[in-house]
Amino acid sequence: MFQINPTPAPPQRGGISLIFLFLLLFLQGCGVYSFTGAYTTAESIFVGSFLNRAGNGSPSLTIDFTEKLKEYYQRNTRLKIMDVEKDGQLVVTGNFVTYRLEPVAATANQAAQNKLTIGVEVNFTNRKEPKKNFKQTFSFYKNFPPNQTLSQLEGTSDVNEILDQIIQDIFTKTVADW
Picture 1: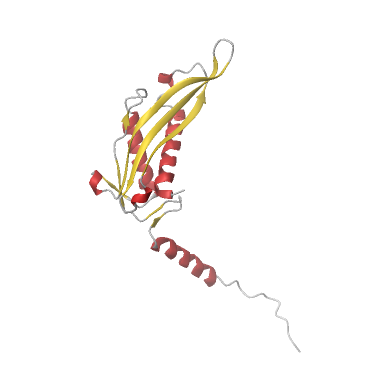
Picture 2: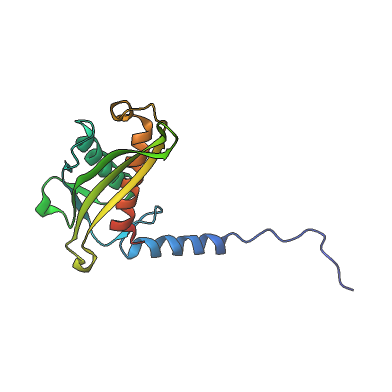
């Protein structure tokens, strides 16, 4: 009486595509969102030149850091980088306040390791949402062998790793709102 069809029906892909399209439109419609977790209704940002108030660090430290921070916002958001502070809906300025190499884990005659700590004080202004304004110090450190001096560390990938972590923390606090 009844005949069984041995071939299954082809999968329906239209439903999945429709859900994906809906999610994409939803995420785009409410503000500037990226898959890095960044979300803001602002359209522009000004990143001021960071100054070195710590007294240590390479001469190019502040310039390199400022440019890396701008590039991070450019790569991970749709914010337009502004050249003049008054044109930015978001404003990030600051200073290096800590750049210190200190001994940790001492042995009988010398340090078993040294720790480099870098701290950056950030002033953040959100002209669209002033309740999100803040002033905060972001710092990170890394341990090094005791035979490395501060001048040997400068410009190395280890120092860049510290700076990259600070940049990521600043980004997260300013636009990812975590």
